[in-house]
Length: 172
Image (cartoon, rainbow, N blue to C red; front, top):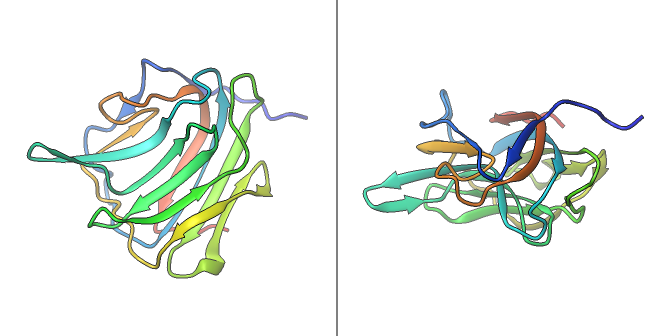
């Protein structure tokens, strides 16, 4: 039986922003998470599922951890250290396009041990690991957005459900 849920619909004009950093967040080499996605538009566009941003003076720092849908319709996980250097880039070969059924992405990553890196789409291992560096993910950003950057740019268009993210925790 296909997965069925009531998700939150993002239409490209709405998104969620925390307005602050995550309570209790601490930099770590470990992160796990899961999200159910059903796309309803914007095929071929770059979109943000979750992303942080910190503004220091007049400069915007886009470090930390983020999940995106890229222009080839795959999902991407990226992470940076406190210097803003990419230390993790992983992309799915599975595509997420309008009209598809619900799909789940599940991941668990420990940058200190390449044997503890996993990313699945619908229970099938699906990751190209183009960058994987033993370093610490900057998870203490000033603001977080779900469905877009906190300022509304690069909006996600589709449904999301059962989203969770655990910094410092490995579950697979």
